Image 1 (tube, rainbow, N blue to C red):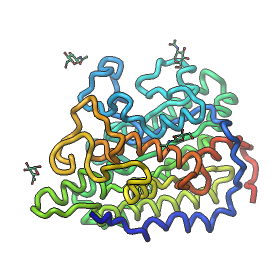
Image 2 (image 1 turned 90 degrees about the vertical axis):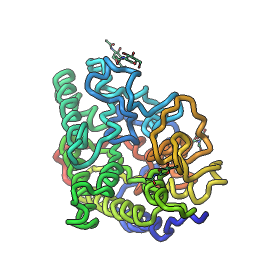
Image 3 (image 1 turned 45 degrees about the horizontal axis):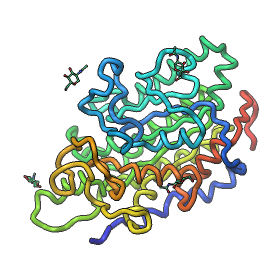
Length: 370
Ligand SMILES: *[C@@H]1O[C@H](CO)[C@@H](O)[C@H](O)[C@H]1NC(C)=O
Ligand SMILES: *[C@@H]1O[C@H](CO)[C@@H](O)[C@H](O)[C@H]1NC(C)=O
Ligand SMILES: *[C@@H]1O[C@H](CO)[C@@H](O)[C@H](O)[C@H]1NC(C)=O
Ligand SMILES: *[C@@H]1O[C@H](CO)[C@@H](O)[C@H](O)[C@H]1NC(C)=O
């Protein structure tokens, strides 16, 4: 079955970033060394399994929407935190309320978070940003302004949003996609992320990782929606959906690059998850996958009809865990590639390891290095 991922689409961000590479000081990476004091995570189901909710302490381990089952759904930021030598990052709603609980970082993410508020906007991008600022205030009150600023400057931020916005837009219950067209929508979403990056920068954050959206058109759910109603034995990624995601990713990476050039001392990187997962889908044997189109845990055609209910699944030879989320095998590869750039370099202009090992040389109020 041909995997119809247009290879042309995969080439874009790298070429654009190469043009701008000269603007960005690339420091040698220091093996095993990370100067990151805290790792703050914002995002959707790529960073959280549905348990970061108000009243978490009461429902702990008992949530019907709980997606992470056993160790089979370790997520990319969990793996990265380990590589940086940080302890497990607590959830915002799972923290114990002490400043020690905040110092290593927090995960503000929520599995259904979106960039825009589409009506069911619980714990979305803006709410997560508000919680970040509340957290900064706690640091300032407890540590004093100067120390808090040092913590913030040397921290690493991770933003991973957008998938659920496109899921919402593809169903287009609000009719907004039809009315404005996908370019305008992508522009709107990218502007929101860009604004959040600038807000963080203005609060003295200097190191920011922005993840792109993966190949949504290749997920079991997208395939189920496209093919289940037909008798055809067709299968494979839905080009139309992937085209939308790639357009968004390209626009986001270009915008972030412009921010790097404009904001003194900013170190903002874009990681092309689309390219990473597509590489695994197109070369399954290299990465040990036996199945690239069905959910390991789910039912119906492609396992895309219903959510995963089972608790004990061995999914290491699948690309997809449930109908929209990849398996831990995929996450381990992506974490490795974003961290080291090897064997596949998917973060631009530098790797997460390089970003983590650059010391924060922030001089507030100093002129730009240019
Ligand atoms: C957790 O789930 C069990 C079984 O479904 C139920 O009996 C119990 O009341 C639940 N606890 C909470 C706090 O919801
Ligand atoms: C709160 O959490 C932090 C980090 O996990 C830990 O170091 C600290 O001892 C905890 N404090 C209390 C009072 O539980
Ligand atoms: C999708 O396929 C399943 C069988 O896997 C069938 O029971 C169901 O009715 C189909 N749904 C639609 C909307 O065609
Ligand atoms: C990721 O990198 C680690 C450390 O270099 C290595 O042990 C592991 O096998 C790699 N995982 C994958 C899935 O490539």
